[in-house]
Amino acid sequence: MDASSDDPQTTAEPLLEKALNQSEGVKRKAEYCAQGLSSVNVALKDELQRRSPIKEIRKVLVQSEDIENKVQECADELHVVNTTLAEEIGERETLQQQLSESEALERHNRYLAYHDITTGLSNRALFNDRLEQALAQAERHSWCLALLFIDMDKFKLINDTYGHEMGDKVLRLVGRALLLCVREEDTVSRIGGDEFLCLLMEVNEDRGVSHIADLMIERTAAVCATAAIQAAVKLSIGIAIYPRDGTSAEILLKKADQAMYAAKNKGEGYRFFYEKDPMGVTTHHS
Image (spheres, helix red, strand yellow):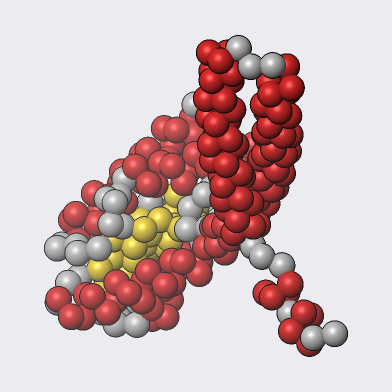
């Protein structure tokens, strides 16, 4: 046996090519049948005009029956063509569905890799990536950035009193409230538990950052009050400014964290970190 016959590309034609070849064959047969039928019709007219004997008319009938058989063959072969095309369409639809499902799964996995499942906010991995990009842009364009470290006070009490389902609802409410306080180019992230981070792009002065921190505290309290929760939901926010408080992500996160704990310990809404202050934070607070 020829070795080339084992090659799938030489032993089997693609379905569409096979269907095309079959369809061309049917077309040629149909054209032949049309020509034959035309000849039969002419012959029948002649026989009628000449009033030919039965023997001559029977010859024409035999020709007509032969054409009839050829037409039936065309119909059978056309059925094969349609079956082949239907199989190809089915295979392509299956492949398309599998591809769509694969792409959807890939998008879902990519979303899970960079977003918090409970709130839908960006997670720590995505926040870190955006922070590094923002620092590079800020250095290039001489921008100032603000990094806010946000903690929910007494969140454990909400979980213990109302259950984790209500706790998750509160986290989602807080996440939405925080997003309403910032611009599209800013980033709000939940990094775990009851802690959030916020990156504010191109800030000009502390007063504007203070305004946003105040909004976050007010709106969080307002939306959570509508969730039938008796325990007050409060935020403690620590703020670090690039480049004043540091030029790296690690330093800015550390100083924002320190300022947040200072605000929490003093029962204040927010504090800025400031190196010259004896406590390591400014006395600016809400």
